[in-house]
Image 1 (cartoon, rainbow, N blue to C red):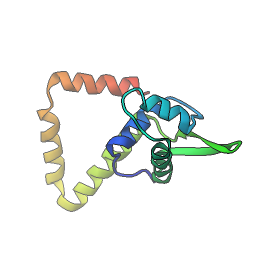
Image 2: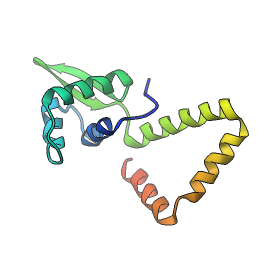
Image 3: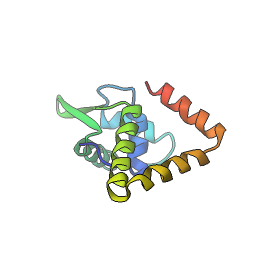
Image 4: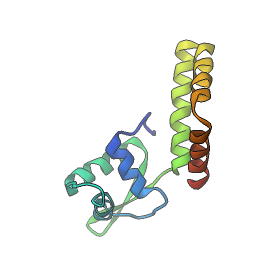
Length: 123
């Protein structure tokens, strides 16, 4: 089952993987190293964690694993938002929907356009 959220490093790893198939840990390291120093073993640990959380699937290729996203970025975001909203509604009832709607209303028009673009791009 996909986890409720992704940590900052998990988000960076997924950004390297979304839209790709059969990517090795070494390839993800190369992607991440464009912006930061990071150890191979750290990336391997994060990718194993993401597999357990349900974001990635892995297959053995020779002595190593190759990874692919189980869901698109859009599907993952929808699943996380859906679970979070359902949990809030269970705990707080209609007030949760009102609060969520109020918060969405606070997002600037510019930001909403950017978010809308992000979702169209991730299809």
